[in-house]
Length: 238
Image (cartoon, rainbow, N blue to C red; front, side, top):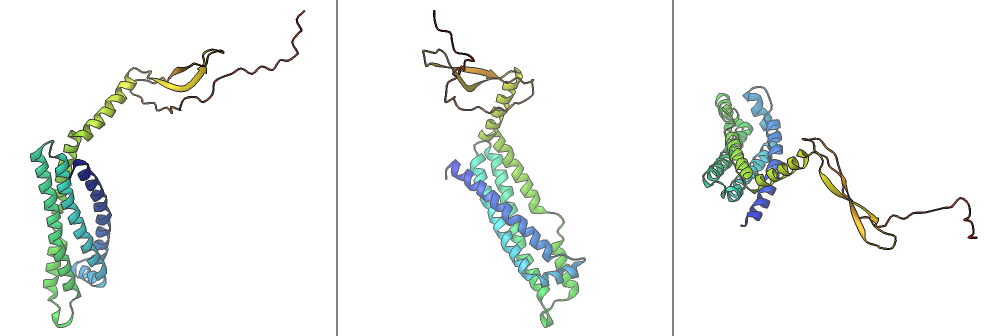
């Protein structure tokens, strides 16, 4: 794909990643609410739909992480191929870890809903729930943070970063003199017999370090003319 196509796909995927990630966290937190592993297992048994929906959204989020890894690598590899590959590896690891946790959550749901002869030992069930729910840390989140930081830095080094620096430099140059000249859309008739128009120039006074935004209208659509209404009739010539 072209660079523009990768950029568009990455932008859409990032928005979709946020759209599925937030509801997934909300649903899973609601389904596993409670004090203690026994209460969490009971809550999962009461909200099986929420757990399954969170699992589906989680898989979609993992797919988004993989798509972002490939597209962002294609966009930033010209800046530094090694760092871009490292960012791709981190985002792929994020997606793989998230996908690996999904079957564990569904398996824990089946344990929570088991009853009768198929019900596991409560102590063993709580131990499994502790292993699945009480992770030592958001491992996938660390890979997400490292990969996103690398890709962001590479983007700032590329054409996007150069565009931002150009805008910043132009603003600094415009305000360093204190009086940036800007043409206006006000025109006047240069002569009563001629219709040539001369554009006036107006200035906006600023102080160094300040940025003043002004509205620049289009050229005037009519010429200035004098309207005279005499108070008394003019005397006739003698």
